[in-house]
Length: 370
Image 1 (cartoon, rainbow, N blue to C red):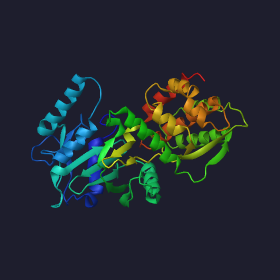
Image 2: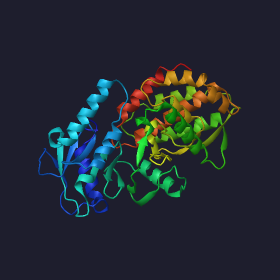
Image 3: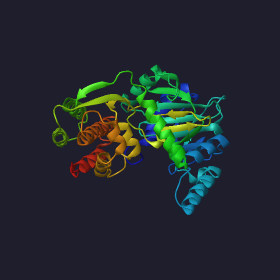
Image 4: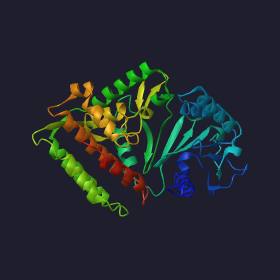
């Protein structure tokens, strides 16, 4: 974030825009050189902004976030850094924030987490997290997530308490993401349930000809790329879709409600055992295979597409899920849906942010052998 955008200016403007809602008093919010007189401190290694003396609740949350697997030395190094950087906060900070919170806000219970498109402020005293769209960023994702979550009543979809343009609040989840749980059997069980929950949200599945569906995806992607004036490779994107479109014209596929970014970090198990699925900003209708591939085959990992193709073609589970189309066609549908996901990701950033990463995705598509 520090390399791709003027993050500290964006942080100032975002906090200032929503200061009344998050308990910030009148007065200028300023990010600058580390000063022990300031209220909050930016630790870029932790990707966290916290008080000089963080509360136990803040420390516990960070321990959950950085509960990693791997070798014993690696785990010890992470734990040592986490303990040291939360006990001696200012020496580990790159910047500090001059800000005045209202009297009801306990500064030690505040934790700010910068995300790709949003900034989250946790108030552990109130048990609330405030999510704010970054200043200057398109509102596509946050608008979609807010609209979706406001009409859903399922217990696995977190409830939104308050919402405004580019802003919503919700209760902090007391639990852990699957990405931080080492019990493989529990993780597998929760993954299975999460997929079942998402499929249960579709009242009536849509059937569509595969060729028509991929054509719709292609036209949507090309329309979106026209919004990104700094991107000049639309013809190559078009050629990718032409290759993918070589499918049996009679095949049909089922479209269902799809999360879009179903990965272990977005599936939480609360302390009471309830599974909660977060980050619904990419929800839309897709094939019933997309979330499964994203969750089980690591679709978002770098240089993963050729490997994923092989996994789909050999998957007994997908074989059991098959509609009336071939595994080869399912592979092409998922590749088209993934390119659509990456294209939408690109236009969710302002200016030329995201172009470099999108070009890397296209370069990987160049090497795919279908």
